[in-house]
Image (cartoon, rainbow, N blue to C red; front, side, top):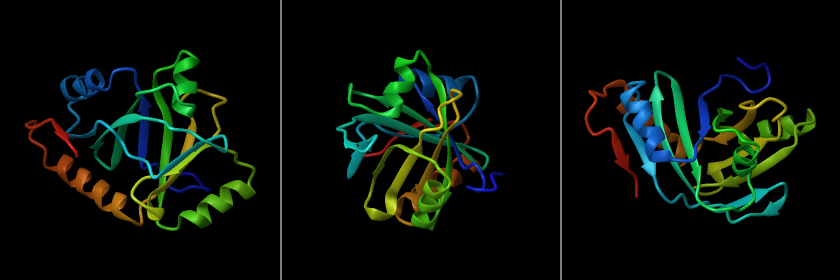
Length: 175
């Protein structure tokens, strides 16, 4: 548990082939079902303060209380995902902390000297997220994510599906 951010709720893996990564997690790790969004629509996205037209696919599943996120960037737009891959890395890129009081946690992080690497929103103002540039060691970027809106309900649904998963219907496309 972080004294600043609380419990880690998600581990995020940046991958070059999301379909192969989902297959690995299902067949080797036994984790699923995966909720796959091939073309994520962000409301807005900024990398290091500048607007970026990042295109990505994501897949989400739970292993117990921990959500696993797979991310494949689909273009060359600036992002921390691209920086991670360009540095020769693939795999665990960030740990995410979830909050229903996003602005307070965001402001607290900034007051402690954290610097935003990229940020955006999915699903409206209550779907904001920020990745703080803490990449001194690969896999240690900190994300905070607002779950007070529809994203929180979706995450709860994914956790519930994983708790009762029998191995069938391993990849579920979200439109």
